[in-house]
Length: 67
Image 1 (cartoon, rainbow, N blue to C red):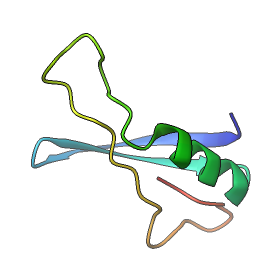
Image 2: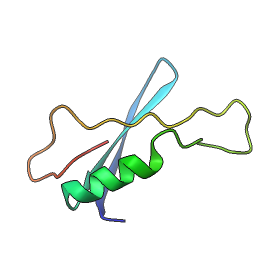
Image 3: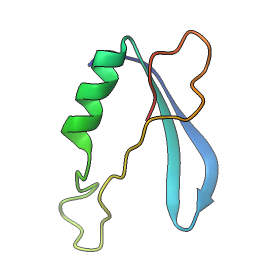
């Protein structure tokens, strides 16, 4: 997968869950975002939302991308 760490933020805003993923390289981050953008979180639930991914505006030190 190419990811190093996943962090869930214990805060839900406007019914959105926030999480950050640190990747091994920017290429890994790009491929993960491209593959998962718009992915339906729960295909069995018709009310399930689609993933809305974006790169972090201020990545952590020694991090290579985040979504």
